Length: 481
Image (tube, rainbow, N blue to C red; front, side, top):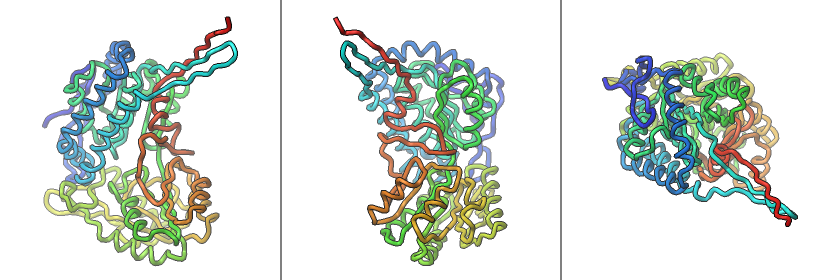
């Protein structure tokens, strides 16, 4: 069995401890490789490498830095099929999804920030007798910690702007899905990225991740993952006055009014509920439906959910693949039981699915639709992060806004209506960082991305990302002769 390696100072290396973690194929439940169980010694080596690389990398011309990002994007695209198969094998998502979304988005992330950095401008202000201008300079060494649900997609989302801005990066992908991050290491070597500019350390959050966050030479930390982990990172980083960007959990409302484009809404709502097995922080897990169309929606939606094909993620006809890990599989089943105990009625799904043959040991859960729960019960307040949605009827804008805003989260929301005035009112009143109206998962990489309340701190995307990864310095010149 080939073991994965860390990427430190431009080469692939074994972990200092020589300890490894088992990495599973969710579709079969079997171990297929091992990844380094890294610790503070490995992080120290990465920091030393980044320190040596930083002066040359940060002093390099913008166009030359951008050329490395373009080369990486080209190599990702060249290896799209191979990377997509690896993503599906390690994550459990359907191969068609890896091919059409995850890996192409990684390509676009590197392409976009390679271009964006060449357009990144600072401010100047002229007043009587003085000229002020702002320098924006890279921070130095930054840490990037990424989740298991969109492994390469979200890793590239953080690496591209950090590198483009002239920083050196120490990244830790999820210990559950490290395969494509390891393959990115190989791509960076092939692309000729200077040694030490990017270092990828594998391991657990409490060891490798904590060592990155707590290292005094790491000036900023960008993290995507659960809210509890984000709080723990803040406890370490905030007293050290590090810059923080945290994209955390969500319990996103999908609000459907009776005047919606019903066909488009239904097609999209099935996707926004169950794509990637519901393991996307932007999925709409609480579906609020205006009472006028509640029964029709319920019947049609349940019928569509029952038709989703769950199976081998490598096959083209599969709609839903496997849950990413056994612990997460068990967490989702716990919440389904909780929903029943809280008085919910399961309209479809609600059970684990045992497949035949090589898939017998895999972790599969049926798409689950639940009704009859109060808006403020645990099932409707806590993040489940799986193929589980609840249906809640409403009568008025005021009522649905109250229920939609009732959770501690504020990441994203979805609104379906043809009433333009209503769309503006709801968008202004709903407490989420992202509002999709009559669409879902449509992303312009120039726009700010991030949540409110317990869904995060700071914004990613476009100029916001480049500003996060740079430090501003004001320079005042007296021009009064």
